[in-house]
Image (tube, rainbow, N blue to C red; front, side, top):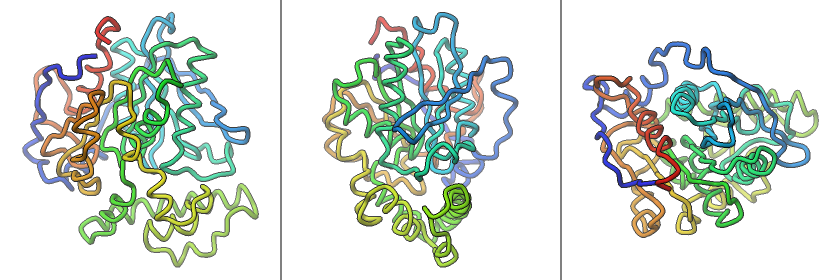
Length: 333
Protein backbone atom coordinates (compact mmCIF):
# COMPACT_ATOMS: atom_id res chain seq x y z
CA UNK A 1 0.00 0.00 0.00
CA UNK A 2 1.31 3.43 -0.89
CA UNK A 3 1.13 5.13 2.49
CA UNK A 4 2.83 8.21 1.06
CA UNK A 5 0.02 8.93 -1.42
CA UNK A 6 -1.35 12.46 -1.44
CA UNK A 7 -4.39 13.01 0.75
CA UNK A 8 -6.53 16.07 1.46
CA UNK A 9 -5.13 18.02 4.39
CA UNK A 10 -7.30 18.27 7.47
CA UNK A 11 -9.00 21.64 7.70
CA UNK A 12 -10.94 21.82 10.97
CA UNK A 13 -14.48 23.07 10.99
CA UNK A 14 -14.14 26.81 11.66
CA UNK A 15 -16.36 26.63 14.75
CA UNK A 16 -14.62 23.57 16.21
CA UNK A 17 -10.91 24.36 16.10
CA UNK A 18 -10.35 24.29 19.92
CA UNK A 19 -9.35 20.72 20.88
CA UNK A 20 -11.84 20.23 23.72
CA UNK A 21 -14.70 21.45 21.55
CA UNK A 22 -13.60 19.22 18.68
CA UNK A 23 -13.35 16.21 21.00
CA UNK A 24 -16.73 16.71 22.67
CA UNK A 25 -18.78 17.79 19.66
CA UNK A 26 -17.57 14.85 17.57
CA UNK A 27 -19.13 12.54 20.15
CA UNK A 28 -22.56 14.13 19.89
CA UNK A 29 -22.68 15.29 16.27
CA UNK A 30 -25.95 13.90 14.85
CA UNK A 31 -25.63 11.01 12.40
CA UNK A 32 -28.25 9.15 10.44
CA UNK A 33 -28.81 5.41 10.83
CA UNK A 34 -25.47 4.27 9.47
CA UNK A 35 -25.76 0.52 9.03
CA UNK A 36 -29.31 0.32 7.71
CA UNK A 37 -29.46 -2.11 4.81
CA UNK A 38 -25.99 -3.56 5.45
CA UNK A 39 -26.02 -7.30 6.31
CA UNK A 40 -24.95 -7.91 9.91
CA UNK A 41 -24.03 -11.19 11.59
CA UNK A 42 -23.20 -11.43 15.31
CA UNK A 43 -20.29 -13.72 16.16
CA UNK A 44 -18.47 -14.86 19.27
CA UNK A 45 -14.69 -15.25 19.12
CA UNK A 46 -13.06 -17.45 21.76
CA UNK A 47 -9.76 -15.79 22.70
CA UNK A 48 -8.89 -17.84 25.80
CA UNK A 49 -10.81 -20.82 27.23
CA UNK A 50 -13.09 -18.80 29.53
CA UNK A 51 -13.43 -15.66 27.44
CA UNK A 52 -15.27 -14.72 24.27
CA UNK A 53 -15.43 -11.43 22.40
CA UNK A 54 -18.62 -10.26 20.72
CA UNK A 55 -18.24 -9.07 17.16
CA UNK A 56 -20.67 -7.82 14.54
CA UNK A 57 -19.64 -8.94 11.06
CA UNK A 58 -20.56 -7.36 7.74
CA UNK A 59 -19.53 -9.75 4.97
CA UNK A 60 -19.21 -9.13 1.26
CA UNK A 61 -20.46 -11.81 -1.14
CA UNK A 62 -17.53 -14.17 -1.74
CA UNK A 63 -15.84 -12.74 1.34
CA UNK A 64 -12.50 -14.54 0.74
CA UNK A 65 -11.81 -12.30 -2.26
CA UNK A 66 -12.17 -9.07 -0.28
CA UNK A 67 -9.98 -7.31 2.25
CA UNK A 68 -11.24 -7.66 5.85
CA UNK A 69 -11.17 -4.82 8.37
CA UNK A 70 -11.37 -5.43 12.12
CA UNK A 71 -12.44 -2.31 14.01
CA UNK A 72 -11.61 -2.03 17.71
CA UNK A 73 -12.93 0.79 19.91
CA UNK A 74 -11.47 2.86 22.73
CA UNK A 75 -11.93 2.96 26.50
CA UNK A 76 -15.59 2.49 27.43
CA UNK A 77 -16.65 2.47 23.79
CA UNK A 78 -18.24 -0.47 21.98
CA UNK A 79 -19.10 -1.83 18.57
CA UNK A 80 -22.02 0.62 18.61
CA UNK A 81 -19.87 3.75 19.03
CA UNK A 82 -20.59 6.23 16.26
CA UNK A 83 -17.03 6.11 14.88
CA UNK A 84 -17.21 2.30 14.74
CA UNK A 85 -20.47 2.40 12.81
CA UNK A 86 -19.32 5.24 10.58
CA UNK A 87 -16.06 3.56 9.61
CA UNK A 88 -17.81 0.20 9.18
CA UNK A 89 -20.43 1.66 6.85
CA UNK A 90 -17.86 3.38 4.65
CA UNK A 91 -15.43 0.43 4.59
CA UNK A 92 -18.21 -2.02 3.67
CA UNK A 93 -19.47 0.23 0.89
CA UNK A 94 -15.88 0.46 -0.36
CA UNK A 95 -15.82 -3.32 -0.76
CA UNK A 96 -14.31 -4.55 2.51
CA UNK A 97 -15.54 -7.17 4.93
CA UNK A 98 -15.89 -5.53 8.32
CA UNK A 99 -15.85 -6.89 11.87
CA UNK A 100 -16.89 -4.42 14.59
CA UNK A 101 -15.20 -6.03 17.59
CA UNK A 102 -16.02 -5.40 21.23
CA UNK A 103 -13.24 -5.59 23.77
CA UNK A 104 -13.90 -7.82 26.77
CA UNK A 105 -17.06 -6.78 28.66
CA UNK A 106 -18.03 -4.08 26.17
CA UNK A 107 -21.20 -3.87 24.13
CA UNK A 108 -23.17 -5.77 26.77
CA UNK A 109 -20.76 -8.73 26.80
CA UNK A 110 -19.88 -8.77 30.52
CA UNK A 111 -21.17 -12.35 30.98
CA UNK A 112 -18.73 -13.65 28.35
CA UNK A 113 -15.61 -13.29 30.53
CA UNK A 114 -14.79 -13.29 34.26
CA UNK A 115 -12.03 -10.73 33.68
CA UNK A 116 -11.82 -6.98 33.11
CA UNK A 117 -10.40 -5.46 29.94
CA UNK A 118 -7.25 -3.38 29.60
CA UNK A 119 -4.65 -1.91 27.26
CA UNK A 120 -2.40 -4.97 27.30
CA UNK A 121 -4.78 -7.53 25.80
CA UNK A 122 -3.21 -7.56 22.35
CA UNK A 123 -3.42 -11.35 22.43
CA UNK A 124 -7.20 -11.07 22.10
CA UNK A 125 -6.81 -9.27 18.78
CA UNK A 126 -4.23 -11.78 17.60
CA UNK A 127 -6.65 -14.61 18.42
CA UNK A 128 -9.39 -13.00 16.34
CA UNK A 129 -7.04 -12.48 13.39
CA UNK A 130 -5.93 -16.11 13.70
CA UNK A 131 -9.51 -17.38 13.71
CA UNK A 132 -10.46 -15.37 10.64
CA UNK A 133 -7.28 -16.54 8.94
CA UNK A 134 -7.72 -20.25 9.71
CA UNK A 135 -11.48 -20.82 9.93
CA UNK A 136 -12.64 -18.30 7.33
CA UNK A 137 -9.65 -18.48 4.99
CA UNK A 138 -9.31 -14.70 4.90
CA UNK A 139 -5.96 -13.54 3.54
CA UNK A 140 -5.85 -9.76 3.83
CA UNK A 141 -6.85 -8.57 7.29
CA UNK A 142 -6.35 -5.01 8.50
CA UNK A 143 -6.92 -3.84 12.04
CA UNK A 144 -8.15 -0.31 12.72
CA UNK A 145 -8.03 0.77 16.36
CA UNK A 146 -9.22 3.92 18.04
CA UNK A 147 -7.48 5.30 21.15
CA UNK A 148 -7.04 2.33 23.52
CA UNK A 149 -7.92 0.08 20.58
CA UNK A 150 -5.12 1.72 18.62
CA UNK A 151 -2.60 0.77 21.30
CA UNK A 152 -3.88 -2.81 21.16
CA UNK A 153 -3.56 -2.93 17.37
CA UNK A 154 -0.01 -1.55 17.34
CA UNK A 155 1.07 -3.79 20.21
CA UNK A 156 -0.32 -6.83 18.41
CA UNK A 157 1.47 -5.91 15.19
CA UNK A 158 4.79 -5.38 16.95
CA UNK A 159 4.52 -8.66 18.82
CA UNK A 160 3.30 -10.70 15.84
CA UNK A 161 6.15 -10.26 13.38
CA UNK A 162 5.63 -13.23 11.00
CA UNK A 163 3.20 -15.21 13.18
CA UNK A 164 0.08 -13.67 11.59
CA UNK A 165 0.58 -14.07 7.83
CA UNK A 166 -2.89 -12.74 7.02
CA UNK A 167 -2.29 -9.47 8.87
CA UNK A 168 -2.10 -6.93 6.08
CA UNK A 169 -1.63 -3.79 8.12
CA UNK A 170 -2.73 -1.58 10.98
CA UNK A 171 -4.27 1.87 11.31
CA UNK A 172 -4.25 3.47 14.77
CA UNK A 173 -6.23 6.63 15.46
CA UNK A 174 -5.09 8.66 18.47
CA UNK A 175 -3.53 5.56 20.10
CA UNK A 176 -2.48 5.66 23.76
CA UNK A 177 0.92 4.09 23.07
CA UNK A 178 2.13 5.24 26.51
CA UNK A 179 -0.81 4.66 28.89
CA UNK A 180 1.05 6.17 31.83
CA UNK A 181 1.53 9.48 30.01
CA UNK A 182 -2.12 9.46 28.96
CA UNK A 183 -3.35 8.88 32.52
CA UNK A 184 -1.08 11.68 33.73
CA UNK A 185 -2.61 13.97 31.11
CA UNK A 186 -6.12 13.00 32.21
CA UNK A 187 -5.19 13.99 35.76
CA UNK A 188 -4.59 17.58 34.67
CA UNK A 189 -7.32 20.04 35.78
CA UNK A 190 -8.15 20.91 32.17
CA UNK A 191 -9.10 17.27 31.52
CA UNK A 192 -11.27 16.67 34.60
CA UNK A 193 -14.39 16.11 32.49
CA UNK A 194 -12.85 13.21 30.54
CA UNK A 195 -11.50 11.52 33.67
CA UNK A 196 -14.86 11.86 35.40
CA UNK A 197 -16.64 10.39 32.38
CA UNK A 198 -14.34 7.37 32.09
CA UNK A 199 -14.30 6.75 35.83
CA UNK A 200 -18.09 6.88 36.13
CA UNK A 201 -18.50 4.29 33.39
CA UNK A 202 -15.72 2.04 34.71
CA UNK A 203 -17.22 2.05 38.20
CA UNK A 204 -20.64 1.12 36.85
CA UNK A 205 -19.10 -1.73 34.86
CA UNK A 206 -17.20 -3.00 37.90
CA UNK A 207 -20.42 -3.11 39.90
CA UNK A 208 -22.07 -5.15 37.14
CA UNK A 209 -19.11 -7.54 37.09
CA UNK A 210 -19.25 -7.94 40.87
CA UNK A 211 -22.88 -9.03 40.58
CA UNK A 212 -22.21 -11.40 37.68
CA UNK A 213 -19.16 -13.04 39.28
CA UNK A 214 -19.74 -13.07 43.07
CA UNK A 215 -16.55 -13.17 45.10
CA UNK A 216 -14.24 -12.09 42.28
CA UNK A 217 -14.49 -8.31 42.67
CA UNK A 218 -14.94 -6.29 45.86
CA UNK A 219 -16.93 -3.19 44.93
CA UNK A 220 -16.69 -1.59 48.39
CA UNK A 221 -13.58 0.57 47.61
CA UNK A 222 -15.28 2.21 44.62
CA UNK A 223 -16.73 5.08 46.64
CA UNK A 224 -13.20 6.11 47.71
CA UNK A 225 -11.70 6.03 44.20
CA UNK A 226 -11.45 9.42 42.51
CA UNK A 227 -8.92 8.90 39.68
CA UNK A 228 -8.27 6.43 36.89
CA UNK A 229 -4.89 5.65 38.42
CA UNK A 230 -6.57 4.61 41.68
CA UNK A 231 -9.07 2.48 39.77
CA UNK A 232 -6.31 0.77 37.79
CA UNK A 233 -4.22 0.20 40.90
CA UNK A 234 -7.19 -1.32 42.75
CA UNK A 235 -8.82 -3.35 39.97
CA UNK A 236 -7.30 -3.32 36.48
CA UNK A 237 -3.71 -4.11 37.45
CA UNK A 238 -4.34 -7.01 39.86
CA UNK A 239 -7.02 -8.54 37.63
CA UNK A 240 -4.63 -8.42 34.67
CA UNK A 241 -1.68 -9.88 36.55
CA UNK A 242 0.25 -6.63 37.01
CA UNK A 243 2.01 -5.57 40.21
CA UNK A 244 0.63 -2.02 40.20
CA UNK A 245 -0.93 0.61 37.98
CA UNK A 246 2.54 1.80 36.96
CA UNK A 247 3.60 -1.75 36.08
CA UNK A 248 0.42 -2.13 34.01
CA UNK A 249 0.95 1.15 32.16
CA UNK A 250 4.53 0.27 31.29
CA UNK A 251 4.02 -3.35 30.23
CA UNK A 252 0.91 -2.64 28.16
CA UNK A 253 2.46 0.21 26.17
CA UNK A 254 2.75 -0.31 22.41
CA UNK A 255 5.66 2.15 22.30
CA UNK A 256 7.98 -0.68 23.35
CA UNK A 257 7.33 -2.68 20.16
CA UNK A 258 6.85 -0.04 17.46
CA UNK A 259 10.31 -0.74 16.04
CA UNK A 260 9.31 -4.40 15.58
CA UNK A 261 6.29 -3.70 13.35
CA UNK A 262 6.69 -5.29 9.91
CA UNK A 263 3.35 -4.55 8.25
CA UNK A 264 2.15 -1.28 6.65
CA UNK A 265 1.03 0.96 9.49
CA UNK A 266 -0.62 4.36 9.71
CA UNK A 267 -0.69 6.28 12.98
CA UNK A 268 -3.10 9.20 12.87
CA UNK A 269 -2.94 11.61 15.79
CA UNK A 270 -3.82 15.26 16.33
CA UNK A 271 -1.05 17.39 17.76
CA UNK A 272 -3.63 19.10 19.99
CA UNK A 273 -5.17 15.90 21.41
CA UNK A 274 -6.12 16.81 25.01
CA UNK A 275 -4.95 13.57 26.61
CA UNK A 276 -2.77 11.74 24.08
CA UNK A 277 0.43 13.84 24.38
CA UNK A 278 1.93 14.31 20.93
CA UNK A 279 5.49 14.14 22.25
CA UNK A 280 5.18 10.36 22.60
CA UNK A 281 5.13 10.07 18.80
CA UNK A 282 8.33 12.07 18.32
CA UNK A 283 10.58 9.10 18.95
CA UNK A 284 12.95 6.83 17.05
CA UNK A 285 10.33 4.27 16.04
CA UNK A 286 7.98 6.62 14.23
CA UNK A 287 10.93 8.33 12.52
CA UNK A 288 13.00 5.30 11.46
CA UNK A 289 10.64 2.33 11.03
CA UNK A 290 9.95 2.35 7.29
CA UNK A 291 6.69 0.43 7.85
CA UNK A 292 5.13 3.27 9.85
CA UNK A 293 3.65 6.48 8.49
CA UNK A 294 2.70 9.19 10.97
CA UNK A 295 -0.17 11.47 10.00
CA UNK A 296 -0.23 14.33 12.49
CA UNK A 297 -2.52 17.28 11.71
CA UNK A 298 -2.08 20.25 14.04
CA UNK A 299 -5.76 20.09 15.00
CA UNK A 300 -8.36 17.37 15.48
CA UNK A 301 -8.72 16.82 19.22
CA UNK A 302 -9.16 13.27 20.45
CA UNK A 303 -10.66 11.14 17.67
CA UNK A 304 -12.54 14.21 16.46
CA UNK A 305 -11.31 15.46 13.08
CA UNK A 306 -14.56 17.22 12.15
CA UNK A 307 -13.60 18.99 8.96
CA UNK A 308 -14.64 22.14 7.16
CA UNK A 309 -17.48 21.28 4.74
CA UNK A 310 -16.12 19.65 1.57
CA UNK A 311 -17.87 18.78 -1.64
CA UNK A 312 -18.94 15.12 -1.89
CA UNK A 313 -17.77 14.26 1.66
CA UNK A 314 -19.32 14.25 5.09
CA UNK A 315 -17.58 15.98 7.99
CA UNK A 316 -15.63 12.94 9.25
CA UNK A 317 -12.18 13.53 7.78
CA UNK A 318 -10.40 10.67 9.58
CA UNK A 319 -12.99 8.06 8.57
CA UNK A 320 -12.79 9.17 4.95
CA UNK A 321 -9.00 9.10 4.79
CA UNK A 322 -8.76 5.71 6.49
CA UNK A 323 -11.29 4.13 4.17
CA UNK A 324 -9.43 5.57 1.18
CA UNK A 325 -6.31 3.80 2.42
CA UNK A 326 -8.16 0.54 3.06
CA UNK A 327 -9.80 0.58 -0.37
CA UNK A 328 -6.48 0.56 -2.24
CA UNK A 329 -6.28 -2.56 -4.39
CA UNK A 330 -4.19 -5.61 -3.48
CA UNK A 331 -1.88 -5.00 -6.40
CA UNK A 332 -0.34 -2.00 -4.60
CA UNK A 333 0.51 -3.86 -1.40
